[in-house]
Amino acid sequence: MKLDKKDILKALETVTVSGEGQNMVESGVVKNVNIFGDEVEVDLTLKTPAMHIKKRAEVDVMKAIHEHVYNKAKVKVNIKVDAPQNKNPEIKGKAIPGIKNIVAVASGKGGVGKSTVTANLAVTLSNMGFKVGLLDADIYGPSATIMFDVEREKPLSVTVDGKSKMKPVENYGVKLLSIGFFTKPNQAVIWRGPMAAKALNQMIFDADWGELDFLLIDLPPGTGDIHLSIMQSLPITGSVIVSTPQNVALADAKKGVAMFQQESINVPVLGIVENMAYFTPAELPENKYYIFGEKGAKNLADDLQVPFLGELPLEQSIREAGDIGRPAALQKGTAIASAMEEITKNVVQETVRRNDNIPPTEAIKITTMAGCSAVKK
Image (cartoon, rainbow, N blue to C red):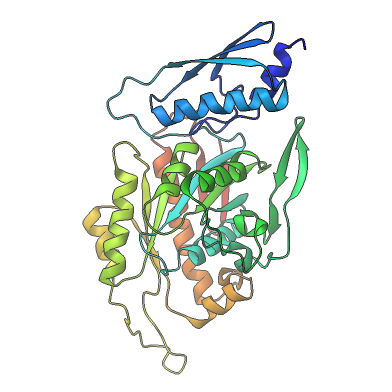
């Protein structure tokens, strides 16, 4: 069989190197392909000296050529490492064309209402006139499909520039992708880190997000593998930390802030949101009961010298709205909607402040005007 270089390159387009985001041909990892009869020699240049990544790249190249071109080809892979010289390189991913700001919403502890805040932040941004997307990156406990009442929907396949991509499901003006679209309601996702990271990369880079002012990423609780994968894959504009006021949650929130502020990650913390800040009974509207403690997240923000974005009360309507798939912030004129508008405006303002440190040709200028917001380059 006569081997063709075009066929080899096409086969290599099915291979992605960890941390690159794109396939190894598009990302420039493949430097040269030589063919000598039934022998194929592939030259790769990687950005990391990690042995397991080099070995995986070699195995994947051989497998791709054998499966897609010729199963008896003799494949030799030459790997050169061109690692950055910095002692503490920052973990930064590649930008997605059309997406202006990427905001990661995180919490050190589970159960503090991170996904609820993310959903309400997304619909409030949309109500302000922004183009918004939401990536549910909580692989093991996705909830965005429930909160947006799209459990029975499935992302469609569309062709963009000759490539097949996922079209996010849209509701309330928010484009949405979640692993929940691809699993059954009673199915547990039991994946190791690399498989979860691969699924996330597909939802990020194989999706037709279109033009977005904000892509919100709902991260899982903690500070683990998924968080690093996201920050390796994408240039995060900033992060928002969600916490409740009690000490147990604040201790974990502090770790979440520390993760983003690590020198090798260096993602700006836009601020902290305090959820379940207080409870006000309907029959005593003037009373506030601080069930989990008073102003814990605000005090933490002051201690860590990061902005305090606002607080949300412990209210039954927020839970009910999430359960029926209609985020509480959609009910205009309510106390919850007003609180979310204040939080969202603060997120926008902190994004402006963060982008002011970037040259004008790259920064996204966001102006907020009396209930109406606009995004400008």
